[in-house]
Image (tube, rainbow, N blue to C red):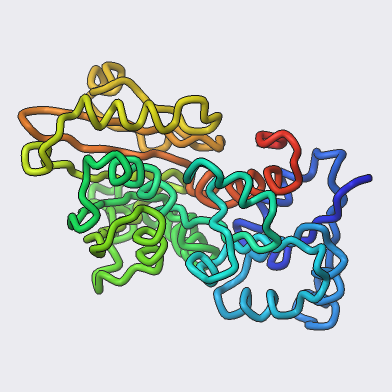
Length: 323
């Protein structure tokens, strides 16, 4: 029997990607809403309650509203918004988070999909906190650079509309207009991913987090400096903590310490995980310092891929099916 799946908010970037991933799956029946009824509460409620799994690809308020519509105890909700990532009764949809997390996802009917920046940060910091290499009260700093697709449809349209003007300006030797250069944001230091970044790492002090959006479509990397001497640890110990924690994980790849391939090229490729559900973890070390890096596709493991992976875990099928 095929599982019935509904995507509420299927016209957004994450919803569209989920549809693409599910399109070739013979074990899934995708329930679709007529375009002229996609904002009809009664029709949405009908489809949400008819589904075995419903993805909420909506703004936070709309996701809370949709969750309240579900009365069918068999419907599993996977919420891609920020609304429920630290909410009681919701399981965090990151199977690699901890031993037992897959069992929690399998048993739950309410799963909160992690944020893209948060997934990378959590996978970097949680093993170090648990191994005692980073104290819970330490003030971590993190910089994340991401493609503009992470900003949703409005930002995508903004960049794509400006592309011809940016190309013309460069050709004329006038330099890049503002959208052509990296743009730091979140300067009020209250990014919406911070609560889950603390809740799921074990950190008790809010990180100093600087996200940057740049003029490429997709791809994301989070960089966390590690003052090894101040922390009383070594790069080898950090590397070993990652290798131990993620041994056997299908979608987390721990790269060699001070990865020779990256050092040979001299530059870090933020987009190398694009089109995959992988997260690559790196430790680069030198002179008593290190920097830990997590790289992923913000539209894959950072959004739609993570949601489908959580669904696969919940349904008890091959975790990588469709990914």
